[in-house]
Image (cartoon, rainbow, N blue to C red; front, side, top):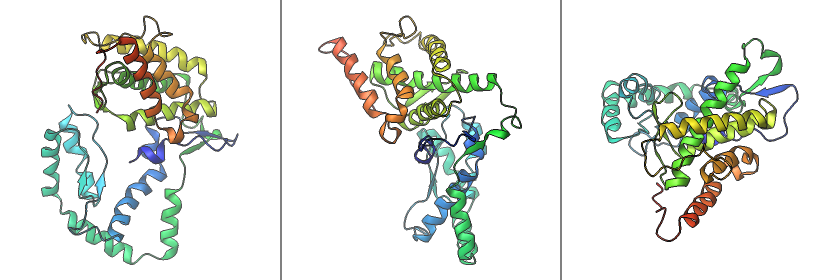
Length: 293
């Protein structure tokens, strides 16, 4: 999964001449990601997974209510040689299946095999080098990219809101992978992998000094009020913004960010499980049923 290479950027200690990528969206334009996408199909083909011996997959479409855009975008997966891909619902699976009628994956894979057969060892080594190029940004280029405080704040808001929105349900209700409204109210599929990405993203920023602990705390408190409003119609929801100091949901989200560097491989389960148990203990026998998915 893309969460694996993209969530553990912070160690070793940073070179003072570099900053990490400024935008969560920027890694999708990075050298390493393009190389990763190319390489995952090539490795599958080299292991003789095609034709008919196994599936070569591509990533998730995380907007379950936006099928029109999915139909425009996910045809790129079979066109890249993938024979399957993640989708967020049975409806999405049915629609995505049409893409494999528009594109002959076998023809694409055969073309890739023919091209790879003509590669030299030097060319293969260069492709691997791109895969191992971390998404860092030279400090002197920050002005070129026109980064400013508003962009940093917006990025903090996006990530804090998504973390709080998912964690509030996981810790407070035992609900795991589900549709969670983003900062603009659009439903997005959130799960442990997306939580890991967002929390490690902010832990990385804190480590490299891109933002301060005070900034993160201020944004977390503002976004707690936003998430509370988004869940106002849910009788089982526990509001966070009324008292963040005693909210297990809020404290879990905060720990995932501020203790992110110490989490083994950035995994979130230990923190979520600890706070989920606190909620269940506080509810007493028979309260807070566990329905985590």
